[in-house]
Length: 261
Ligand SMILES: [Mg+2]
Image 1: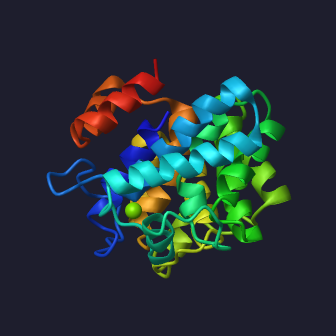
Image 2: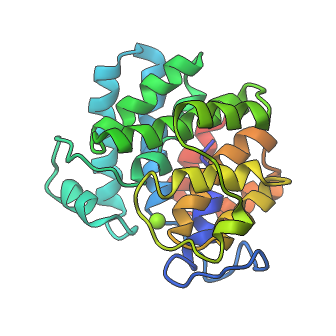
């Protein structure tokens, strides 16, 4: 876990404000770096590890707030959105009704610490609610986490597509159709369905990342979300994992390796 999200984040990092509309690019380039997507996904993972022991959503939320504040202080310039930066710097413990894609970019670990789809959706909702308590913020987190859970537990792409179509978003577009016109959109509803489609149309892990970066927009975040689903569905080889780790500092590296033991 976290590898897929981080791989997408790292691959998309150099194109977030400099979009490319092609699948032809070097995924792990020397100008790539990790951003807030990786840092906050780790925060959720750390809080989920505790949740697995006590199974209390109330405690989980308190711990997630603590983890996000801690990591936000360690990595203050990771590229947080404006409102989230204020929430971090003021040490706020109150949500601010966000519908931004941050709730979906960080949510993937919830699927690894739960025993049913229902439990994943409940934990995903809780993970969003500490900041992104707007219905659209919760919806984005649940949709992304639901895909990861289903992928981890043997669901087919058709089943995942139906789950999203029936409960969250209409996936009535193709990546080729949206690539020429898709632009920067930090909302859940403008990022999560696109990221899911990038996974659904992919032929493998790397192809998922290429799809997500190629549509442009907030592509480190869409690649992070798509990558987290792709990791659960296809798995990630050791070479790619090591490549991801090579972009991280010792602290993040150690945490991610430990989480996956
Ligand atoms: Mg980012």
